[in-house]
Image (cartoon, rainbow over all chains, first blue to last red; front, side, top):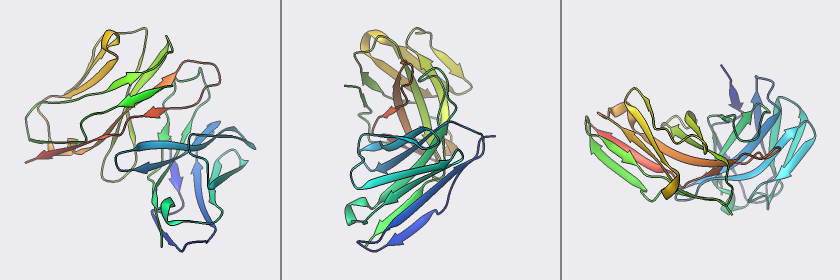
Length: 115
Length: 116
């Protein structure tokens, strides 16, 4: 079974802090994704990576950056956390294939609260 | 631009009732994939089904069935004889079939509550 793990289920940080959210997958997937989930908005893509050291902006990259130094790990970084970044963050991974046909496998999510 | 709309924000039914979750999508692509995911209270999205735009056959898996109608750009999900364990948030999503494309576009989600 594919397993995607996220470093924390719940996180509370203060405005201005630098925040790291870590995601690890154990199925050697090339593609990894970071989403945020907000009520009424569904899931919105922040960044994705299609290979080690490769990254691309998603729909809402402002205020975030990412790092993919190893294939299994994809980190989301909030350089200076703000209250509007309070949200549920979901990581996903996917095997490379014909675009679109492979499903994404999701982690359990990190609920981040910025005070 | 691609868009997925799940107009039903919340649905609440009594156990054993049938329930249909609506999904309407917009895309200019002629080929694409559609997905349904379930998000139980634990938070992790679970893949339910994938359907490509070439295949308009409906699909049934146990109590779950999906109705794909390209003419109306809809991909609706029906749970027959609902159970309390079906309570979750359900997401419909769209992905183009383009080499290198990665993105899933999600709908807003429908929160389904099955009451005993």
